[in-house]
Image 1 (spheres, rainbow, N blue to C red):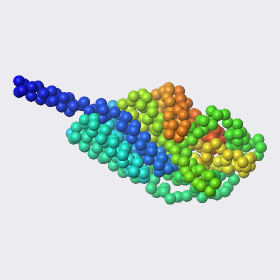
Image 2: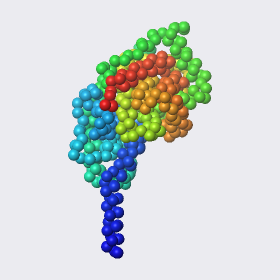
Image 3: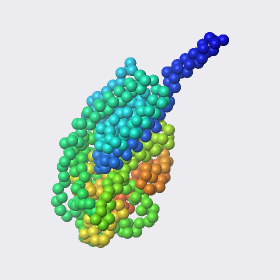
Image 4: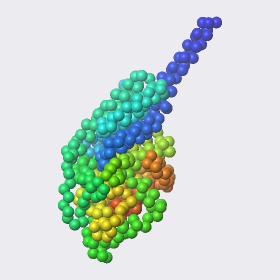
Length: 440
């Protein structure tokens, strides 16, 4: 009797062991929620380190590229970015004799790039420990766990090598020289900071033929004569700012996305740190992919397309900013119209034309519309940590249009920088989705 019971129990154990080895762990371990949580954690590090918007876009892009390459390894439906992106000639290849968990490898790759390109390593310690413990708790076999970690690290190393040739290091340490030529950018209150990333046009694009491939319509001639086109644009911004509705003010604050707002109270100065424009769109990608229940490969694909659109969008925009070097509304209005006028938002430290948020939001909306759907309604909770409520949108394009007009409501751009910037961003986004093939 005891012998029969022993045989029965042994048989049951073997059945469950075999079932586990045959993939019971896979559904849990391949859950894209691990990757989504990692994206949000890297965002926390970016916020902590106060990276300016273009630099933040670079971090998101390389992390997303690494995650994508790891996520699609061995998947016959997707294709690598090797040969499609400028200068990307190879990425570490999967050893087909070794079984991996793509979800673990992709998460590891994203996190590894994030850690390599940010400074605040302490923000990752508890998160990383918990992440690997949760993966092991799925029941993933030890050999597959180790193979996946090693593969994710190797892919990340390939992408880090790729990143070292994008001219980022060569553009560090340069400062923009203010010319004081009428109509050109000058530092703005309250911190009067130096212009941010004046050499970003020299960063290697991912897909663009050149950084100036999609120039916007030329801005209006600087002319403060009453009745001139430029004067009308100045007065438009001034009057909108003086007569904002509560809803317009809410829109301005929701899309502020200023990584470094300087607050001055008496003799005390302190900074408020927030998510960047690119980080906001990566957050939207996280929320909508979760809403649509996308699988691992689809989620990694969405991150890749969004981050590429934002990255090349910033290069296109910054090329125009430092070509025209246009003065900000606050500077021109205070000097010529009303010395006491203040914008709702703090003016960011770089030239006015075109609007960065307009360009990258339009580009991201095109990429997301192609990847996740053109008419996806969603609730955006990105700004909840900053005390702002959820906003609802009927599509990515509607969200992008609201992000664009928010800069006029905020008093930091003239209307042409928004309209022409949005068109510029749509062209960048359209170029990317037409050029890049993620599916076979």
